Length: 159
Image 1 (tube, rainbow, N blue to C red):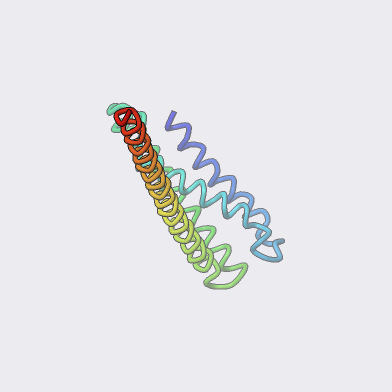
Image 2: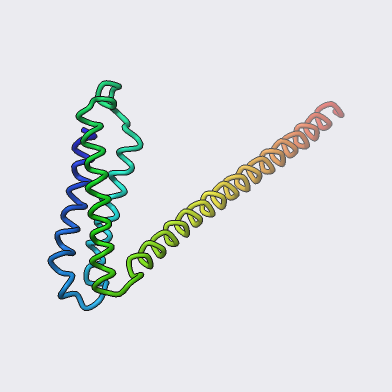
């Protein structure tokens, strides 16, 4: 099952590279092949994630020569394809284009992580405020019931 997922990652890398190769010379700007570059990164990330996790596999499957060889070869192929795309894109759109893409991608990933972190902090704070309000409401209800009970107790004992 994980091998099939790894195969999907390498297949995505290869398909993206094939698309870029066939369209790089006719592309007027990087936007025309951006989807394929995104697919290239997604496939590469999938390979890296599957390689580092190995969830759901037994020890025999994780440490079997076939799986180790397949993962290693797929990682090498993906690295080769990434280098090939770097060279092609830099040749077509000018030196440093690939590095600019990597830098912008890294920046956006970091911004997304930061936004997610801030959203978690905000949600946690809102939950704490909610439970604080519930606590205050509970205290007020208890005080009200105590006052009401004291009032009835005084009324019935005074008679």
